Image 1 (cartoon, rainbow, N blue to C red):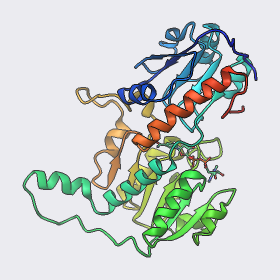
Image 2: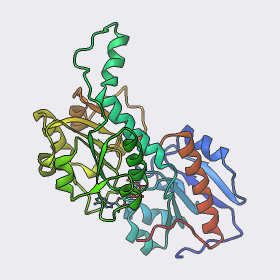
Image 3: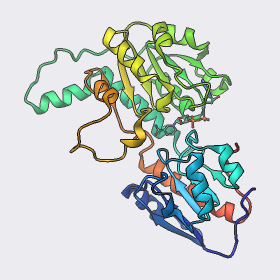
Image 4: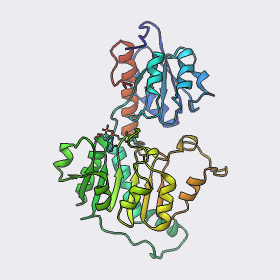
Length: 339
Ligand code: NAI
């Protein structure tokens, strides 16, 4: 362990980007002795890092800025542990953290069901056009044109990344009677046991009617879905991304939607989401022209990174995060992220 904690002092912990639901779940959890919590609504950035001064623990979420300059400022202010409230850690500069003696811990699994079920919700809503039907009936329009869907049974679903979330998603889609294809450098026997066939990515894209992304964002997976891979897909295919925004090249998605090559798109994540998501910006002009264009398509649903947001997942995030901080404080850190 790099930054040995002082066992006697209170573990002052500041939770950046905290919303009411974070406050409720953390205050509802068993608070280990010696941990003090301070809820801070601001997103962590160079401008707000000073708020963490004299806090040994910074508890951060996915759109907090954990780049080298921010980590330097945190370390200078006395922070020694970054406790992520997320599974993904692509937003942390791990080599800078290591250089600065900052430990990083995360919540490796809180509820794969929450995310997998949200991916399924996007599939069902897009297929049966629930977003359009909802608006239509509220306007007194009870017509059905443009709402034709397809039976899921027998359709081929391609799963990119078959770890905890991908495997949970696979089980649900198997229940619908879908054929499963998978792509992952490390095939999962539990997914193979469902009858899934592992293929390389171009083959999976070519054979699937629905493709769902469940792999982490790494240098290898950035823009996994791009102009070229979109061209491999079946015309009119459905793409679901609840992974990370950077897995897809968004301008290429827009071109594929315009041409009809992509038939449906469900996004819970967006590459430029950090400046937008989790805030009410409904009174302001949307400055992001790419997102604005995406939102014009009738066959696109965007949710603002809410796949994790179930009561069970929030409770598990709070419990594991507090446990991570407490075990780090006793010198036996768990769920560490290694650079
Ligand atoms: P996991 O670590 O259990 O599984 C990830 C799988 O992806 C592993 O089997 C790994 O071998 C595979 N993989 C790695 N690189 C790949 C590549 N280039 N192509 C295909 N497969 C690849 O992770 P878990 O818990 O299933 O989460 C997956 C991702 O979901 C996270 O990394 C995170 O980005 C995202 N996520 C999104 C949430 C949301 O609210 N939208 C919430 C939680 C996670």
